[in-house]
Length: 273
Image (tube, rainbow, N blue to C red; front, side):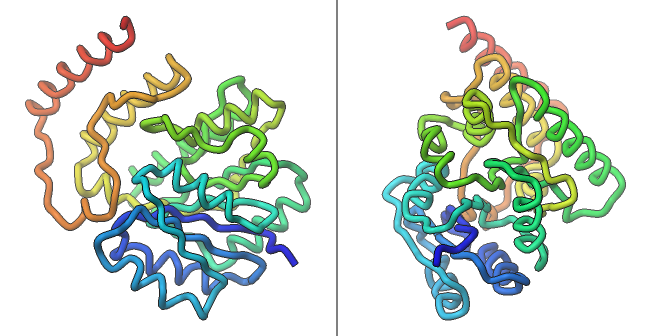
C-alpha cells in the first residue's frame, strides 16, 4: 500500500542538523510516510547519521551528482511512492502531530497544493511579530495572481508536481515561489495551513546577522517580482551545512552601505540588460 506522504529532504553536509529533523519524524503520531534523503555528495558524517535511522523509519538514501536543491528535490519526487510529496529542509523542525494534522486537513480541505505556516524557534517579541507578518503575507498572497510560499516546505500532490514540471533547476533562488505560481497558471490555488506549522532554522540569520540576511532577501524578492524568476546569481548565497562550521564577520553599517551600493548598481544593470 502506498504511503500518504513521501518526505523529501535535500542534504549537503548537514551532520549538525539532520539528526533532530529525523528524530522529529520518528516521533510522528502517524506512520503513513516514507523518507527520501537526496544528498549532494556530503563530505561530512551526514550519511553515517542518516544510516542510524534506516531500521526505525522507512528511509531511502539517494546520491545526487549535482549540488542543486531544486534538482535534488526533483530526483526525490521521481523516486517517491507517496500520494503527496512533502518537501522539508534538513534544518527544519516539525511537531510530533504535524503529519497527523496535515493529513486530516488535506482530507477535509480537498486540494493539490498545501503551504504550512512558519513558526519561530526564537520567542522574542521582535521575531514573533516578523513571523506573524510573513505568515499574513503568504496567506493573503494566495488570493492574487502571483502567490508566494513559506520557503522550501510545502506539500504537493505527486501527479500535479510532475504535470507542472517540478522545481526549476535553472533557478538560482525562489524556485519554491516559482512552483506555486506555475500551479496557479494551471488553475491550482495553494491552501495556506495557518494552524499547521513548520519551524525553520534561523542559522543563517544568526551567522550572517540580520542586516545581511534581510538585505539579501529584499534584493531577491524585488528581482523575483520584477522578473518572475531568479535565474542569475545576483547575491552571494552559498548552500550547505558546512557554512556553519566557520565564523563569518558580520557587517557594520558602513560595510552594509558600501555593499548595498555595489549590489544595487549590479541589480539595475541586470534589469536593463
